[in-house]
Image 1 (cartoon, rainbow, N blue to C red):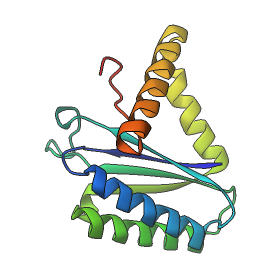
Image 2 (image 1 turned 90 degrees about the vertical axis):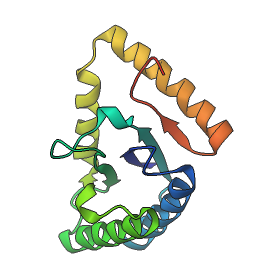
Image 3 (image 1 turned 60 degrees about the horizontal axis):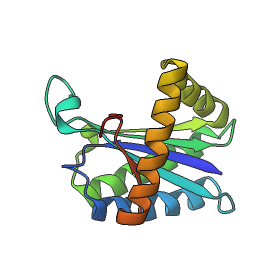
Image 4 (image 1 turned 60 degrees about the vertical axis):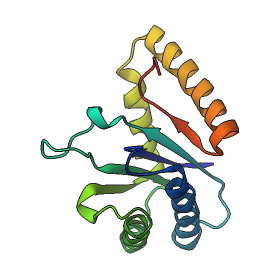
Length: 153
C-alpha cells in the first residue's frame, strides 16, 4: 500500500476540496505510477497560526507522494505537473503556494522514520495514539483520514 500525505491549512482546503483532490490524486496515481497498488491518503490540518511562507500566512500546501524506487524522471515530472494543475484548479491555490514531491519508497520510509526519531519514546506513543483516534474519528464523521499535528486537539 502506497501513501500520500497532504499538509494543508483547513481554512484554504475544505473537506469538499479534499474529496475532489483525493479523486484527482488517485486518478493521477493510477495514470502515472500504478493502477494496481492500493493508495492511502492522509490529511494533516495545520492551524492557520502555525504555518507561514515568506513570513506571510497562509502557508503552502505540502503533498508528499510515495512511489516505487528508481522512478523514471519523466514519469515523476508528468505526475507532479498534473497533480499541481489539478490542485490549483480544485482549490484556487496558486502554484507558488503548493509544494509537491514524489519520493521513492526508500526515501519516503526514511522521511517518515526521521519524523518519528524527533520524538521521545513517550512522545511517539502519545502521538501514535492521538493519530489513531483522530484518523478513526475523522473517517467516521468526515469520510476522510484527517489529523491535527497538535496532540492536545
